[in-house]
Image 1: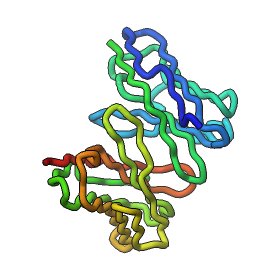
Image 2: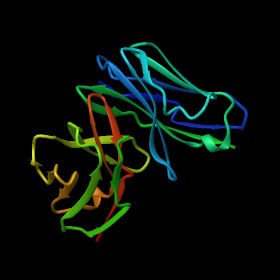
Image 3: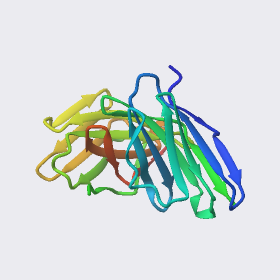
Image 4: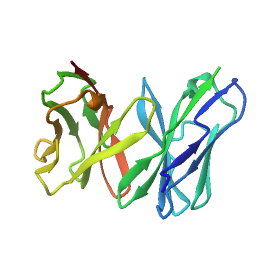
Length: 111
Length: 109
């Protein structure tokens, strides 16, 4: 298995633009998590899904953030409009029997 | 909610043992994990321990759990330069985990 796949690996965008981050979990894993990592705040859980259903989105910072999981093999995290303070590394992780497998992350820079 | 704390930095000499510590608040946590993050990469699961265990050894890694004090530690024997990374402890039950702040381990020659 290729592991968790995230795209793009790097994204640079201007303030106000829409950003879409993508994640393909490991086949057969039934839970998916989105995290954000910054120097100031460390690793923050944004939202997670079980069987494609959002379970806990209390970590989503504001309405500008939204996440979807239309099927078991794909999820997106969208930021609209983006702001400089959204600059961070965004990870997704898929879960098998409690063990979280992280993707390589998307480094987002909003100028 | 759960609070997980770690010291931010640890520096050791190559060949020495490293001990990374973690404290947590939720005594109902059933799984406790250690993850490693190398520069520019995601977190990689190193090892884990169930809450009904006191110790787990896996090659150069030893995990100790003190449930009474809610204290978890990771010992790396014979630390190598390739062990330089950020180490996160994570605790929880089921699928959701709470991660610590991470400890940056620097291995000096």
